[in-house]
Image (cartoon, rainbow, N blue to C red):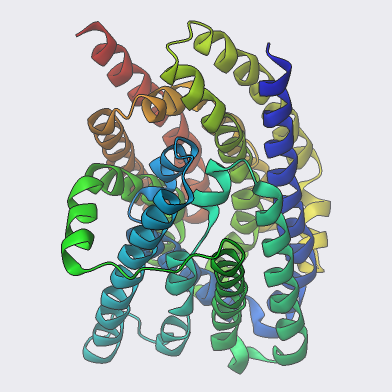
Amino acid sequence: MNKKIKDIFIKNFTNLSLNQGINILIAIVVTPILFQNLGSSQFGLVNLAFSIFMLISIVVSYGYHLNGPKRISLINNIDHERDLISELISLRFFIAVIVSLLIVLITFLTSLFNNYELIILCSIPILFSEAIHPIFYLQGKNNLSVLAILNAFSKLIYLGLIIISIKNPDDAFKVNLFYGAAILFVYLLYWIKFFHTNKIYFVCSGFKKIANRLKENFEFFFSSIAGHISIHSGLIILKLFTDNNELGKFALANRVALLLRMIPVFIIQSVLQNASVINKNNNPDLNKYLNYYYSRGLFVTFIIGLFFTLFSKWIIILFSGEEITYSNQILSLLSFIPFLAMLNFKNILLILVNEKKRILNKATWVSALFMISIATVLSYYYKGLGLAIALLISEFISFIVHSILLSNSNES
């Protein structure tokens, strides 16, 4: 394999791993504070609200986290970069404003968020932090070390605010507020420095350009919603069938599992830019390039799953400060989600580099609808244990669905 290509992967994966390492370290410190000071019920509601906003934030991203890096990687002119960055941020900010107003109206006019309205309203800054998230630019430029630095600064600010302010269950509304505000502040500083350093100006897009972008990326946006439903809707479904106490204990294990779930995502993000360039040049080595990281990714995620299953008891103690048998059992199952998600590595990359929007859209929605169905049934009968099993099955079914649809598209 070309040494330069391999070095770029190693650089990207190292930076993304460092980024996730920071998240894990912060989670190790923050989670016990939140779980013990808020109690399992409020901790569950905070994580429920966070899951809701992770789902909603994908509306704000509008699919450009999928194809934005590829477009940036193919641009070599700073003025063209400025135009694309300005249009994407304008679009996402516009969506964040509209969605935020809808959330406020729903909160005040309905009882949908009964008992945790304030937590929901104070989570809105998460949407605006997503609107100006620079990962699409940094990934496209193979400059993910900057993302790790930004993440470190924002999480340290968040940690400081949590330590100072979270003392009892009444402080639950502050958790997501601090999370969103800290990230928003750091990302704003990054873009201000970026535009100043490059001596260019942010150009706010008019409604016509925003409308064009909305039309252009609708299929990627629609498919990304389904993808996030598969990942983040578990707690929302479980809330329908269990009490806040069990929800909180499940959320504790799920929090660890979500950190692990990012490993396959990091591998995809590390490979995507090079895969796009190889594919653009019609290089026949693309499949060989993908297979190289596919086999290694499967091995690594399997070992990680085995490790977290064997040591789930101690990992839960590390994250919560106490032994919780229920959370141990859930984590021992969820630990293998990264391995099952890694099965889909090649499918996702082949779809992205060839911009097969319709295939991605169909595959993700079939997978999401299956996940919602099986998660609802198993959660109804077996509560959190059923949901954990449903999440595992759903990852495998997603791999099968993507494989079949991609294979059919290649044959036609």
